[in-house]
Length: 205
Image (cartoon, rainbow, N blue to C red; front, side, top):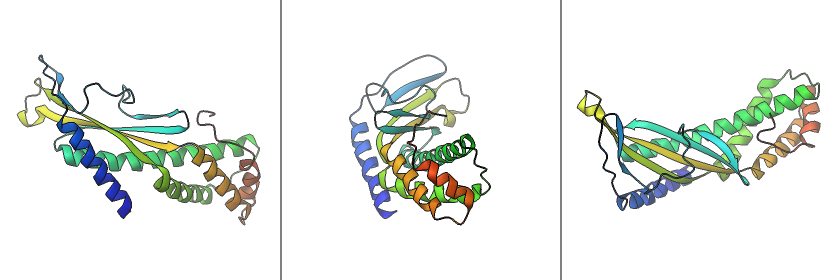
């Protein structure tokens, strides 16, 4: 955890150096307007809805957005933290869904789902901590003149991109297959045989 904290600090430090040399945007009119941004052009990875996941080549991308932030440094730090947590939970849920689907398609009655889910969470946590990386940060400063409260008119929206190598998902499945093969629960033993013969496909279900 200390190494991750140091990495987050360094990323934040480099981010603010970049932001300091970025230009401001002057816009007029009612409603939310961007008056400052950390890059001249909004990055392509920033989704329209500001949050989501997709695969790109050999990587799984996760984008986290947090808005109406008043303190930019704290907002960036918190968005990084939440991006790592949310991307880990997303990966855990996808693998649980994958194993559940494989079990159902194979006619295996999954009676020990709690034990399976616990094993997945542990394997994902270890892999995610080792291989997930924050690759980019982008922010916009917004002013909304239509808001009556002056203190609420200006705020920041921060976007964080996390990347995780998809090849590691197959490694997780292999480790789970090995673990389940030694389980005292028959249903997990049956699942182990199936998982060892399958490769992860992010959008296969």
